[in-house]
Each structure stands twice: as C-alpha cells, then as structure tokens.
Length: 446
Image (tube, rainbow, N blue to C red; front, side, top):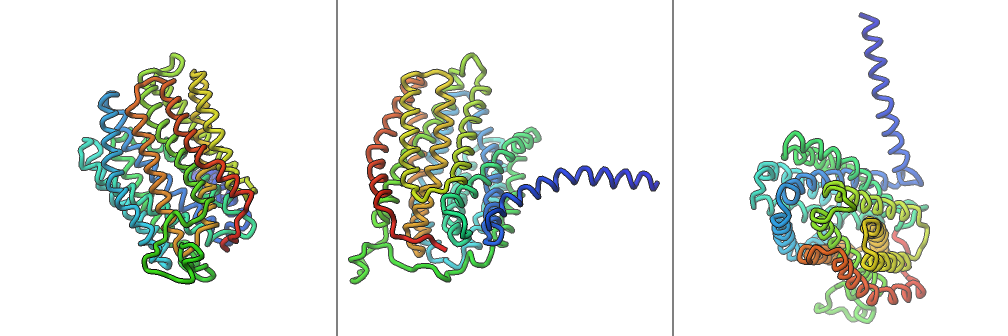
C-alpha cells in the first residue's frame, strides 16, 4: 500500500510540474519590467481571460451563423447579424463613454459588470444556439455592447497601471499580446467543446467570464483613484477662459494626431472587416491552389492571426515615442500589399495580404490607444475611447458589408480594398507625419 501511495504522489508531482512551470513562466512574463508592482500584470491576466471568453462565444456563433449553412444562406445570415447587432449598438455606444466618465471611481465595478453580463448572456444564448433562432441576435448584441464597454474601460485603465520603465505603446502591446495568446489557446478548446454539443462553448464562456468578474474586482484600488489625474474640459484653449454651456467635448477637439490616427485606423479596420467576410465567402467557392475550402480558410486565418500576434509583439518591443509614424507606416504597408495582391492575385498574395493586414491593425490600434492616452485629458478619456471604438467598429461593419455584397472575384475585391485604403492614406498620412514632427506637449500619464 505504501508503494502505491508513493507511486501516486510521484505521478501527481510529475503531472503538476509542467503545469506549474507554465504558470511560473507566464507570471514571469506578465510581471516583468515592474508590471507586477504597478498592477499592470493583473490587467494583462484579466484581458487574457476576457479574450478567451470572447473566442469561445465566437466559436459557438460561427458554427451557427456561418459554417452550418450553404454559402448563399450564410451571406444572408451574416448580413442580418451585422445589421441587428450594429444598428442598436451605434445608438447605444455614444452613451457608454459619458456614463463611464461619470464613474471615475467605479472602473473595477464597470469591468466586473461587463464580465458578469456576458456570463449571464452566454447561458441565455446556449438555449438558442443549436436552432439558430432570431432570439440569438439580441443576446449577441448584449455581448457585443458589454465587450465594448469593457474595452473602453480597460483602455482608460492602462495609464493608471503604467510602470515607470514601460511606454504606453509597449504597455498596450503587452496587454493585447496576452489577449492574443489566450485567444489562440481558447480556439481549439472551443472547437473541442463544440464536439460535445453546440451549447458547450457557451457553458465554457460563462465559466471564463465568471472568473473574469472576480479578477476585475481584484485589480489594485488605484484603478479607481483620481489622485494626480488632470481634470480639464475637452475644449479649445480659447473656450477655457470663457466657459459656455453650449461648448461640448467632441473628437474634433482632441488634436490632429488623434484625429488622423483615427482616420488611418478606420481604413485599416475597414480592410479587416472586408477581408474577414470577402475571403471567407470567396475561399468557400474558390479555394487556394486546389486545397479544400476548410483548409484554405484555415491557412488564411492562421496567417491573419500570426500577423496580429507579430504586430502585437513588435509593439511590445517598440521603444519609439512617435506612434504617429508607426500608424503612417503600417497604413502605407497595407496599401502597398493590397495593391500588389490586386495586380498579382494568387494564393501566395492572398495569404500575404491577410498577414500584413493583421500586423497593420495590431500596431495601428495600439498606437492610436497610446495617442488617446497621451493627448486626451483624463476627465473625458473614456468618452474618447468610446467614440473611437464606435467609429472603428462601424468601419469594420462597412468593410464587412462591402465584402458580402461584392462578386466573388479576387482581383475585383482587392481593387476595391486598395481604393478605400488609398483614400485613408490620402487623408491621414501627411497629417500624421506633420504631427510627429511637431511633437506633443502632453506628458505621459503617471
């Protein structure tokens, strides 16, 4: 009996060793460069949990809305999904920012509420996901709104947890990279749960978001503190001396860097939405190089995910203080690759344009977040994040809608994508480079 006990204990230690080693490695990476002391490590872990839960819900919805029906029906269902989720969200999103601006001492509670809401909605969706009924869409809307609310608050929290040795771009990159790694782990887990039944990924998402609720409340108390924050109305300097009730904060007053960065990211987000839906339908009908539709979609998805991870990793290593130059560079690179794909359309360039789009979107979004965190006063920063997220999400939907409506011809599709990227470059690149030369008078938030 003693020998059996010793063998069991030895086996237990052998099984725990790789898990414990992995956990220690993850914690070492998230706590590096003072992130553990400042609390940024806890935010990275929270965002990883958030991304894993979102991926599990995505797996459940994808199996119902897209993959389970023929191409023509799938295009109609996806269009309905975009319309039903985005039309109300466009009306609700402008409310999220001002509401959160009035809750500067409730950021942890706001993120916990967003997590708990998605946990409850995941359970509600589990009953409808198998049938694909229309009741699924209001619940999907609620998940999207809660996810965006979490994202707005999370972006506003990063400067409060910023270690002294890490720039905003690098901090944003580390948070995003943690989310990407969790997404990569959650995708096969969701696929495995789906084999048990269409509702099982949603059960998993409920458990993950319940964990996220606890982690949100365990963030450092300084997340809710207003100590040391600059309080200023988001208006032009001439209005600060003579305040007027008619003066309202808006994106037009945040400075040229943020505005041009938003224009460039809008074009990149349109590209992302366009490629997501156009290539998804195109490759179902015209797979890559004799491969099957599922394999072709998998290759493109892996290329886009790898590009996104690479862009995030580059951002995590980036020490540049000029995010304007980064946004201008990635927009130009995306335009060049899209034009090349339109001219020399073949499987290699299809995979390459997906990878470059992933890199560009990751670096562009991180740099835009840094511009908002740098240039927008704390009092209205969540409003700026909410409005920018709304605009970017609308651009993604517009790009996706174009991808659904276009004929399934690769050259035509890439030419259209090149056209709206060229428009974005024409409106944003020159302004970004001018703003980069001029510099910013705003200090980094402590």
